[in-house]
Length: 266
Ligand SMILES: [Fe+2]
Ligand SMILES: [Fe+2]
Image 1 (cartoon, rainbow, N blue to C red):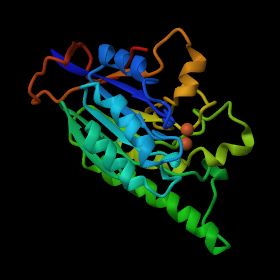
Image 2: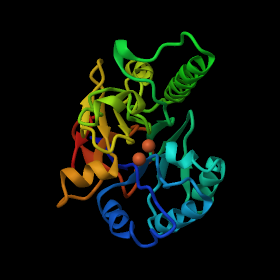
Image 3: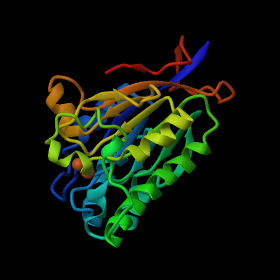
């Protein structure tokens, strides 16, 4: 009998300094429905320490393990490191940035990602120095994701991003901004390492799900998108991921019949 872990994922909380209490119903539902919470960036609205402290207080009431990546909004005030530190110290959030962590027998690899566009139309490193610097930042984020994925040894492996790795989950946004919503450069390491599931946010008006060209499932868990698609449903996605058999059984882990595939619950 195999064991699976229920992973709840949501991004783009955009917590403000007036959000106190606003996320309590959401996190209470997460605690009822999942064993681990992953947060896919834009945790705060302007990336201020004050906003981070509000979110940390909201999160600290929920005792599940929490794994996150930051989003572009979390960098707006030049205090991304402090935002990460507050969330870590006050709420126990593990903030990934080209790094990996194992939680309850499942591996998590995370990076923020970067824009740049998709497929043959992706921005190339050519011409002016600022264009080359932009593309270099996208390549660096893809390398961060690759090195994080390479560290995972568990059968169940989860990739967290803020930016989209495929065009399918940004479809529905204004076509003019597609290149600012993600980068195909992020898809390459995903196809190489084949995590069980990929979560991202950022595309508030995209599509809920897609797959990479190698068939890896990709879920857009931007909160505004989830709310728009199912106002009667909890605004997070839950996916079951197999747990390493050598991992100690926990009260939170659940029995499951299929170790090969992640099953979507909501
Ligand atoms: Fe966002
Ligand atoms: Fe964003």
